[in-house]
Length: 442
Image (cartoon, rainbow, N blue to C red; front, side):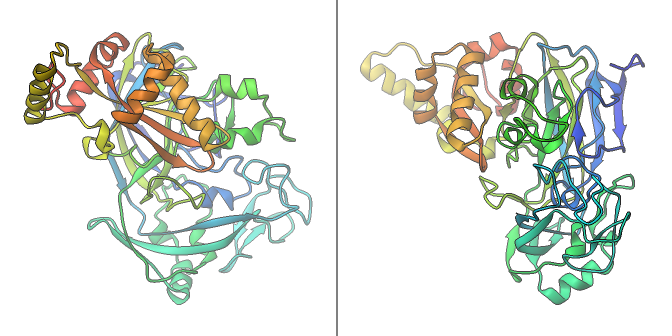
C-alpha cells in the first residue's frame, strides 16, 4: 500500500491490460470518506479483439484506501455514472479456433506466426480488420454470431441500432464516437461494423459491470467471479488456478448487475492491504440478466465515495440498491402501510413487529443454481441468520434475480436492523432508504 499522504480525491487516468491483482501498483491512498474520480474505457469487445489484453476488460489502475485491511470491507457509494460514448457495438460471440490457448479472453495467439498476445492494429473495416503487427495476418480470436452497432443519446437516455451503411460510416471514424479515454489501449469494436438488427430503439440506464476490490492474486479482470473464473481452473496458461485458490482469492468484482449504478452503495470485501478499488465495464443498458453474454459496453465517467467498515469480513459483495431498483417484496413500508401492519398485529395479539431494511448479497458460480446457493450461503454466514430463514425471507420479503448467465445472481431480503447495526452498516441502510428507528420509510 502506498506510503503517500492520503488524499481527499484521487483522479485515475491509467488502466490495466486485462489483469487485476496485487502485482499492480496502487494509486492513492484515498482518505476514508474520500472520493475516486475516473474515466472508464469500455469492457468486453474492445479488449476481446485486442490481442495484447489478458482479460476481457480494461479497468482502472487500483486505488488504495486509507486504513483498509484484510478482514474489513469498503463501502462504495456511486455518486456519478455517466456514459461518454456516442456509439458502441456488441452482440453474441463466437470463438475462432487456433487463435488462443485454452481461453480466448486470456491467452490469445496469432495462428499464422505463433506469437502469443501479439501487438496488433486496425486495418480497414469489418471482421477481418484486426491484424497482427508481427506478420500481418488476421488475428482476432472472436467473431459476432449476431451483432449490432448502437448510437446513444445520453442526455435523453435513448438509443437506436443502425443499419450496415450507418455502421460502416461510423467505423470509418470511430474515435469521435467511441470516445475512449486518452490512455486506453484497446481497439474500438466499432471497426467491425456488424449490423444484424437495425432500427431497435432501447432505453438507456448506465451501470458498472466490473467494480470492487482487488483479488489477492493476479487474475484476468473479467474472470474475477465464480462463473468466468471457473475457466481458470486447471487452465493451460499462466493464470491457471485450482478451484480452492479461485474461491480464496476472487472478490466477485465482475458482476454485470444492472442495479450497481448511480445512487447505489456496493460493500466489497478487502483481501489485500489497502483494498485496491478498481472499476470498468460500464454498460449503457441491460435487463436483469446479461443473456447475450455481452451488453452495450461504453466509455464513461465515474465518481465514488469510499467508507471503510472495520471488521466486516466478506467473501463477496453486498449491495444496497437504489430504492427504485429494489424488488417489490423487499421494499420498506411507508407510515401508512406500517399503521395497517400494527392494526393487523393488534387483531391477532402479535406484540413484536420487526425493524428491518433491504439487503442484497451477490453470489457467483458455474451455473445460476450454484450462484444462488452461493449468495444464500454468504447471506447466512455474514448475518448469522439460519440458512433456512434466509430462504423464507428471500421468498416472502425479497427476491432472487439473475445478473448474468451462466452464474451471477442477486439474493435480496429484508434483514433485521439489529443485524445490520452489528455488521456496522445499519447507518448506511437507514440513510439509503430514509428509515427511522422502527424501519419505517419517511
